[in-house]
Every structure is written in C-alpha cells, then in structure tokens.
Length: 124
Image (tube, rainbow, N blue to C red; front, side, top):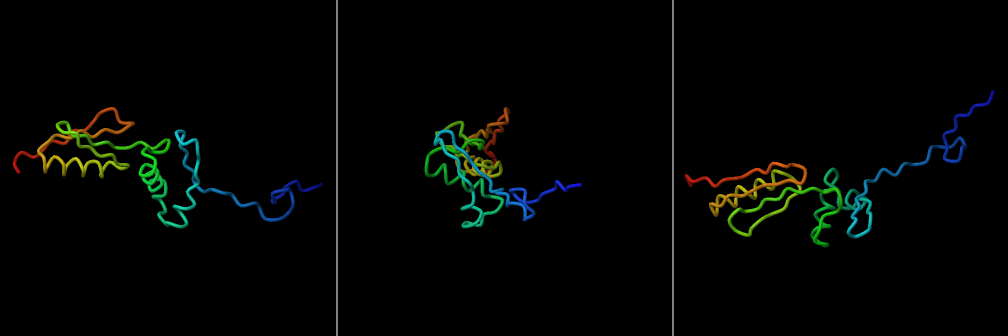
C-alpha cells in the first residue's frame, strides 16, 4: 500500500511551501494593487497597516483606495469639513469645530444611513 500524503510543493517529502499572507489593497481608479509589506516591515505599523496605506494613498493621489469607507464631518453652516478613517476622529473634529464656531456639524459614514449631528454647547 502506498502513502499518498505528500507535504512538499511538488509532491516531495520536503517542507510545505511558504504561504504569502501579506495583506493587499487595491485601487480601481489607479488600476493597481499593492501588498502592505512596506507598512508592516519597514514602517512597523502592525494592525494599522491598511489605515496607514489608505491615508498615504489619499495624501498622494487625492482619493482613498477601494473598500475604504470614511467618516465625514461637515459643518452645516460654513464650508469646513473633515474626513477620517475612524469615527472617534470625526467626532473629535466635529466637537472642536462646534465648540469654537457654535456651528452644527453632521457626521456621516458610507455604510451608515443615519447621520449624527453634533450641536454646539450654548452654555459656553
């Protein structure tokens, strides 16, 4: 009886081939895909590799890569606004803007249909 279990990449008895599990990010506007080895290995940003790449991509191209949904805080009274990758950053911007200008700020997210409104504190 023959043993059909083979571990190697070509059916030999050597070690299994390495799996490349480096995360990738694509951008249909740029028609490219990048692996995040630079962010993981050289920058050492770990779990924030996708976020760091997305911020760098926006800074250098003017748009975010595919599948990145941002939190957008927009003033309801003036043209000021800010875009963030995490909710707490958008809320912080909205609270500070409302505090300094006494303007209402709307916070929206690409997957959340219901916006949040930050109202200025009239007691200050």
